[in-house]
Length: 613
Image (cartoon, rainbow, N blue to C red; front, side, top):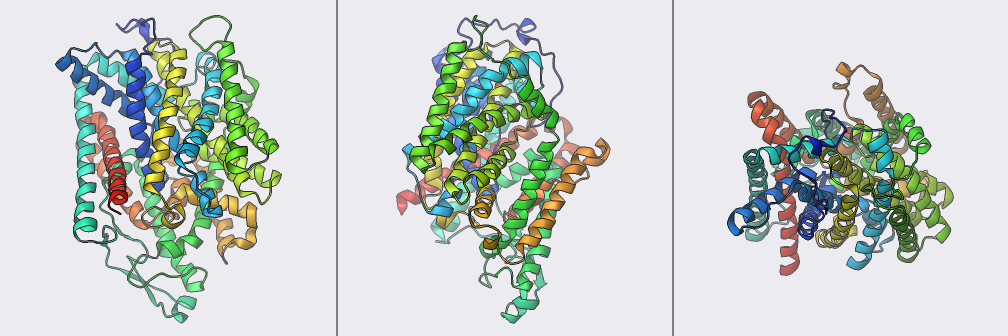
């Protein structure tokens, strides 16, 4: 989430002509709208997560889409005005549903399938992701008073959503322009996806959509030359231009520093380190006329994962003050009197149900010992609490770092047990994501004067919608995870990262390819150094420090993904210089539309493939 200016933490209802209704905006149509929008947007995050390892906060998107829909019905059918408080509950439910991808669908669940071959049906996945998310909702409900009322943490994502709500209910015409930008991006990206699929895969009967390759080769020596491979083309090294508007939109969303870091990482990984590993015989080339992504990834993912993990943990270590404050200042968010929060009874019931559900699901679905499952959930309560505070201060919820902490602990408690290692960490990561998401939404509610209890209920409905829709989307997109993931079509970098850490604890360093241990040590050290530089250098110098997370990610995704994202970021940067006012109002919204449009059409394409065999 991007930073936003500090606002007065007092409820904004005092300054806005929008009195709080008795129901707090928690109406049937508000919840239903949020569940529908959020369930649909959950498909986008799962699609993007399996493609590039990123998910996106959908709060503002849900605000704009619902406003446009109900405003149109108000004008044509005379329905009641879609109030700001209904919209707030709508976006709370929608963002909860869209965040379901972090409950394991793009990380731990497919990673466990790749390691064990075991798969799960729609019902099991929906129950699991719902139970994992329930833990995070329970923790967030208890943290609200301390983090938002007492500590008054900024929660920049919540501020951005509150500002959007104020803006569109103060200037409705401006809101419709932003909706038009969002829908334009969705239509353009969706049409592009369908057109490419219809022409190349349906009409031309090609296996996939071709990329535009760059005209260069790299000479290979050593073991590669001995084996008869003397050169690598740009196509072999995955350097080409992919006609994906989703990746272009991602470049506009993540910031130019991350885009440049991705390109630098891709050059280091696929032009320098990868060819060196090929020359030494540590990595194997693929077919001369095709991409070597698959065989080279088996070696390159190790240094890439090492850099991402060390950078995430180092960056998180700088939050030690937040960790101490979170552990020291734990005060319940529920109270005996009605102050708009959950009652103490309701909150304790929610925590109890969440604990039992998360433990039972680990035991029944994954065969994890009950004691280990219980330890994992109790640890998750602490780590989700920490993640919520860090998210409030920085706007970034450290989902990956929290999951890795649990993986490291369970590597010691249950050595060799891949299911316990991955799924206990899955509870932590999914709960941390939902906790951070709800706290940002509760910050929005605080700023507009909405009662928090209604938002907690909306979050629960959103979790149900996301679990149902997201689990279905996962099964539709990757019906064969072992055969489809960690390939050019589905790089699934988060899956590679979780799988690699679990493998280390399952088989030890002996299972890592030759030369990769040394590469991991170098990359891990580089991740620590760059993370330290991000935190310790003067502000003016930090913007020149490459992002270690983005560089590490570039080792795990194909080079053409990094190229397309970089071009999107470059275009967004230039547009910001040429048309600063337009960019300030519509660039992020249009880029989000590009991501959503291709994602939704990607699911439609997958359904078409299933239907036609």
